[in-house]
Amino acid sequence: MNSTVIEAIIPEKAMFRPDEVAKLLGTSKRTIYRYHGEGKIEGIKIAGQTLRFTRNAIISILKESE
Image 1 (tube, rainbow, N blue to C red):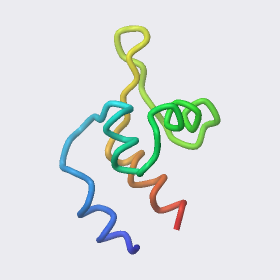
Image 2 (cartoon, rainbow, N blue to C red):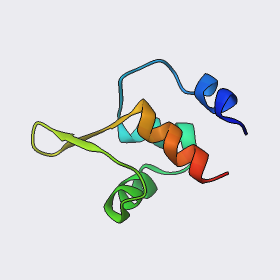
Image 3 (tube, one colour):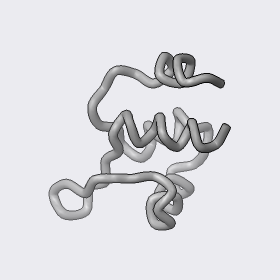
Image 4 (cartoon, helix red, strand yellow):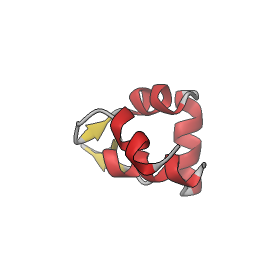
């Protein structure tokens, strides 16, 4: 998948919940948390424990998995 296709499939939204990222990547929410813990995907903690991911972080992990 090239960069243009990857960017086209990710909705124009600033922040994504872990379940939304899991759906976009075709994996489980648990895997998203594991990827975050391993440093494979960058996340932002808001309000203490709430984890969110930027569109750019999702695009980056998709590009790396090519």
